[in-house]
Image (cartoon, rainbow, N blue to C red):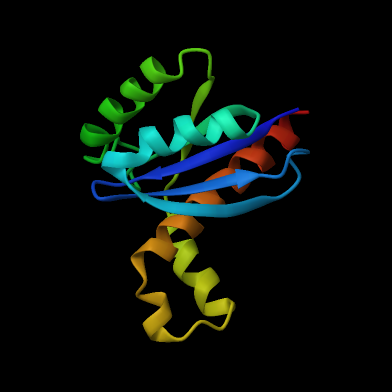
Length: 140
């Protein structure tokens, strides 16, 4: 059993989260400049056994695709080309930024720390991964 990676792809930054090898716990891993995310992922999968990658799928509250898909699709296409054997799945990421900010508040982070966009991206990736893991458990 390998790890599952999740990505919260943004124009500038990408939050990355990963499970433990038993796929029980989701943890934030890093925030990487989006232009460097492919190199980061190729390096990571060489060092760690990764079973699949989960990508946040942005939708508007109405359910329509977000404008963010314009820059997410090309990154995912390059990722599929760079790692052709790696399964890649999308997970609805609506409200993850709101949930990330709430998690930071609940965790007692001060306002200045909550303004750290890299941390928000990493927490959002963790929420995406946790959502994916919960969906899989419900299907079983």
